[in-house]
Image 1 (cartoon, rainbow, N blue to C red):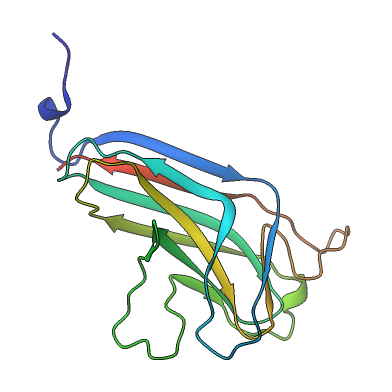
Image 2 (image 1 turned 30 degrees about the vertical axis):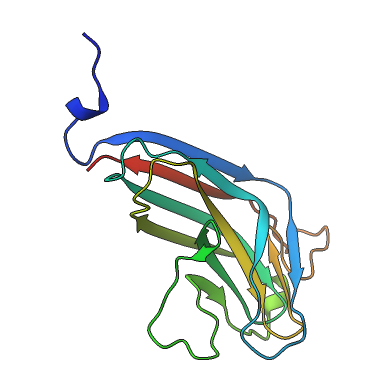
Length: 167
C-alpha cells in the first residue's frame, strides 16, 4: 500500500521548493530618513502549499548582497515581514543587512537567513526576499556597488528554499 503523509514520523521533510537567481537586482532608497519601504527582489520568491495546518515551513536564503551604503534584507510571508523585533521604533526590521562601509563599493557579502515558520494553513503560501536601502543609498543583489568587469569585483548567485516539515 502507498505511504501517506500521516504515516511519516514528526519532523519528516514532506516537500522542497527552490528558486535560484542568477541575474542582478538593484534598489535605491526614496531619500526618506527611516524606516524605508521594502521592495521584493525579483526571482527570490517561492510558493509552497502545506499538506497540513500543523506543518512548519523551514525557509533558507543565501543572498549575495552589495551596497553603496546602509541596506537591509528581510524575509516575507506574503506581505508580512517575518522579522519582528521588540520595539523597532524608526529602525528597519530586518533579518540581515550591510552597514555603511568605506570600502563597500567593491564588496559583495553572502547573507544566510534561516527561519522556521508556522503558517497554519493548507493554502498556497508565498515566501520572498525583500530589500531596502536607507535614504538615497543603493542596494544590490548578486553584484557589487561599483560592478565593473574586472577581477577584483564579484558577481553571485542567490537562492531561496522552502521545506515543509511534518508535525
